[in-house]
Length: 387
Image (cartoon, rainbow, N blue to C red; front, side):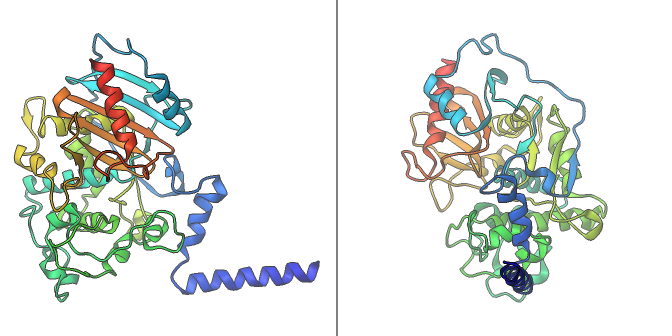
């Protein structure tokens, strides 16, 4: 028995060494943050596993409540579905006021949960703001403006900033959320996101093909970070987000941005995935999009920029960091994240819908064959609540 344990320990040590030497040492952090904590993948409450920066709110401006607030209850089947999927929140706002909120214990209106890929929309909004502020010359600026590493890449030197947001840049990436030995897993649990995305070149002509990629938005974050620091050396992505979005929108809570490693070691925000915020504050992002970038009478973003974000590109279901179905009976566009994080905007009803939670069925697709069926279910439920 003792000999068998010794052999097993030796095998495990050799395996650990092999993984470390092969560049897959991140797998231990991944295992410790998922399976050893009872999860099968990254989860909405995993901020404690990572270094963090605070996204500070300014003067809060709480959501007004509509006279119909919570007068209607969720359809029993929808409530059960939300409950079974480990939902944290389901929120509906219409005409700029809350119409419905349901929170599932232990979550409440102040709970901060992970945005996952809804952060891609946030990063794109930040880049748009940085253009207005003069940090970036143009949304269609060449990537090499602040990432000269691709100056000698025949394809990379042609790529534009906007193409990173549209998922059409041609940056080589293999998107997978469940394979342990995978570049996307490395990006989430590794400790140098910037070096990782820069280690990947370009494998097709920029602007020629749609390919959803977390690496593209992290690369966009690297561009944003460098652009900010070229003029303001101490300005971080988190602080810029605070000044440009969190404070102007009167968010109710500070948010968190998780990082790849400590700031003292050169760490940066994981701009493709990981803003932790409350459902009400996520809803404000939807309201901002619904209002064409206007907030309290001020044009924070040009209407043309917001329109460009929600205009289909090479695929009819994706614009610039927004998914959409303009053909549905209730046309909508949506910020979408892993495990069913959604901020859905339904313009015909002047409505914003938020769902956050532990799990989502993103494999069963709806009418357009691309977006998850559950999004349509949430849209229909929200319409029923406001009618």
